[in-house]
Image (cartoon, rainbow, N blue to C red; front, side, top):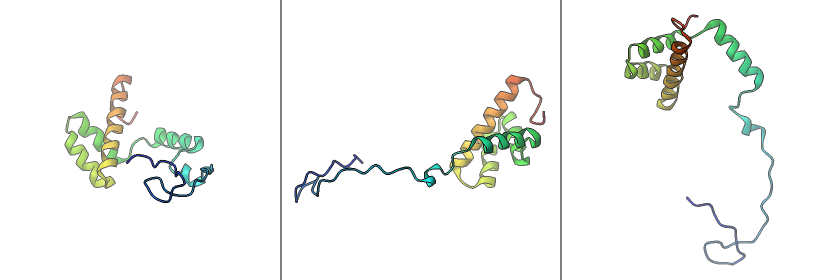
Length: 110
């Protein structure tokens, strides 16, 4: 849908209505929802280094190693619920697997 044009002061027509100036509204704190802070990013990475992967993530990496992408998708779908998050998680695990292969690690438990 095209953005609405500004009102022109007419009573009738597509752009009818009183002409007003657009207010500059500051960004609400709720607009930050979902963004990760530096501290939480650090903590998340630290936990990942210490604890490595959850069991379902290990299973996904094993399935991706043997080339069973569709089966990996089904495993993640059962765990996460939505198809969109499932595809994202499978791609994340595939990139982790590629990084491990390029780094020369044997598996996820370094």
